[in-house]
Length: 160
Image (tube, rainbow, N blue to C red; front, side, top):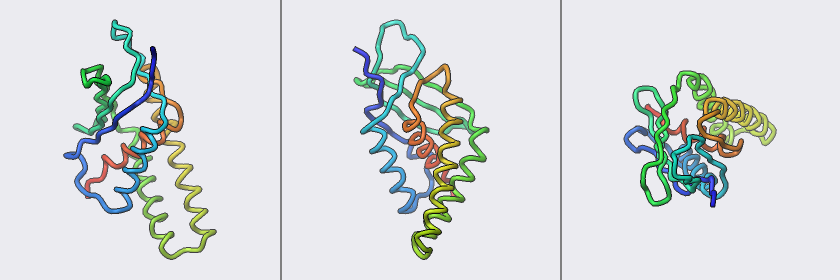
């Protein structure tokens, strides 16, 4: 019986060099929300009819996103590698708007916070659409899953 979803997410801890409380909270929430509700369906036929659920490990190696997908029992399913060049700008924009948002929630008015949050959601949504486009033909995901995966891609890009 098909069960196209992620049941476990792991980030390559060696990839993440710096964390602050805000980023750590984003990571925790994204992983929790992703596990609670997602649609994740690798499209390559592996010949044995396995259709989920999946465990996912994300890492960045030599400027590429590595999605190591295993089966529920931990046995290998497939590894997908995506170039991250097209994500450089969205990641940079997302970091900039998140920094503004975190500063605003400490001292701005509710209206200012709402404006920044709307911009943040817009950047996040555009990046999720880009991720869905890059996964097309490889992995089928819904929009909410793509948004949460983009958040985790951002976490993997923290280097300073």
